Figure 1 (cartoon, rainbow, N blue to C red):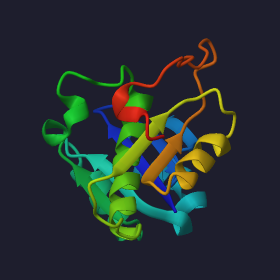
Figure 2: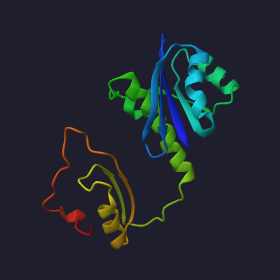
Figure 3: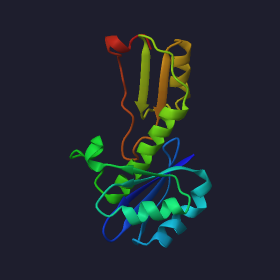
Length: 173
């Protein structure tokens, strides 16, 4: 599945598409024109799980128009999204991808099987010097811990930190 985020402004729409693994697939700054937005989304239409639009003052034409064309639409209230509480991503492209990411996370919450509850659970995310994350995945599996792992590539200008000693809470791993 793919998710789309549309950051709507009075004179443009920043459109972004992301896959369910969080990979950025496409983005484009578009005119506020239903045909232009549809033209951008159309190649991905069959794969789109959700198209999220900020519920700003002028969202009606876009949501209604795309709904009529068969797109699965959702509105996001910027005041209720934690990222918007003074923590904007810095540009419209980042905001559009954030909206797509919200749709992706909601899709995962609805479609990924429930994890068995228990007192020991780890959620490991970030970037690592392990190029593909297989060593860390193997270590977690060998410990029989219930865990979710998600690794993204390290920023180009940085190197993964070197951990010389685990804190007490991390020693079981």
